[in-house]
Length: 236
Image (cartoon, rainbow, N blue to C red; front, side, top):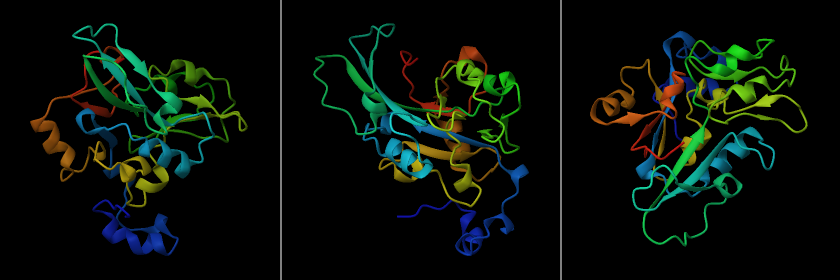
């Protein structure tokens, strides 16, 4: 099933015609993209990781998004057990842990408003688009790895053959055509939702009013735009 954002009703004929860039309804200054991730809904199926790999031709053994499984015994939040076999791409084996609780945490680039990666890039290859997506221009990237080291979320890698930095692009080639991301489209439970923070009609605003959300490593003050619902305090 193809999932379209509301704007796609206008843009769809241009997408089909192969000329999405002339669609009249996408204005880059009218959007500010982020993502909502609902921990309670994630079942660790790995659909998002597989969809991302297929959509973006991610090399085997590398990940633009991945899923971690946390196990906490009693209330020992400071020492969680974390595993992520092959990035959760093929799901998870049944847990043998007794007691405590298990939950899954999808991870990805947080598309920070004050991203450390863009600040350290010596050639401007890593940049933030006007609609709030952190991207990498592979034609400028020199493979210095500064951005990889600077990212506090561990979401970047050096492509093994291109030797340039890569990461989640929030499926920029899709969202600018009125589509949602590959990971959101493939999630069977709606645990991941693309959010347009500038669109007053986007459901994210009502959700933020009625639910408590958190970001990863808030003490880093990066302005992360990956918002987690019911994020456990043990998640690192």
